[in-house]
View 1 (cartoon, rainbow, N blue to C red):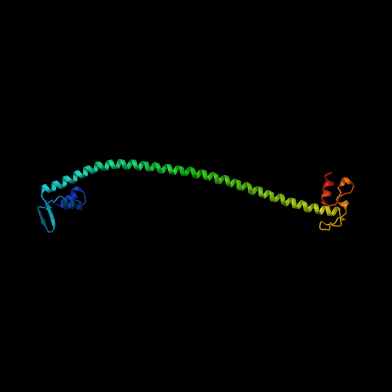
View 2: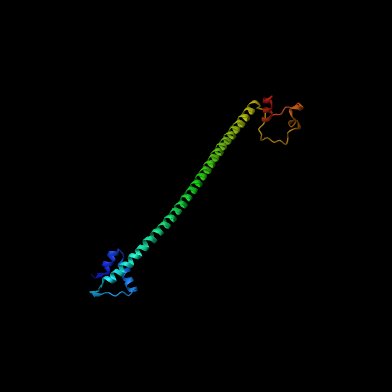
Amino acid sequence: MDKTVPELAEELDINKLRIYRYIKKNNIKPVRTDKNVQYFDDKSSNAILSHFRDVAGNRVSQDTESDTKSDTTETALIELKDNIISRQDREIKQLYKQVESLQRTIDQQNKQFDQQQQLELESIRTFKKNIMIDSEYHPDTESDTHDTSNDTKSDTVDTRGGIKKSGLFAWLKRSNK
């Protein structure tokens, strides 16, 4: 029974263009042509079928071999990807620890800065308070803005010389005794 190219392609489960190329390449002549449909006798049909079955058989073994190579390559790529991911995870954890450490340092420095500001403010308050106390206990003392060019030498002599100093430092010195 004569077969057409579409029938052969369906039987082999391949594209009919492959069969047409094989026929043209090997100069296989159809037994008859009816309305642009080529019919091949049993001898030609069997030659075409056996060729593509052999090729398919070889391809199956080659496909299995290439699948094995492909699986090996794919496994290697997966391992490489996993290694890269684990390395990046380690780097991320290390960077996270560094960020935490830097944040603790910043927090500690902010706390120290706040303490310094509070101490400075308390120092200024104490200084102002002492100035007020000094001016209350020594109303005869002049303010710090008076002209010192007319001051006598006795103002610069310390308390060991018998002359008492006036002012904030003198008061602090007397209060410490």
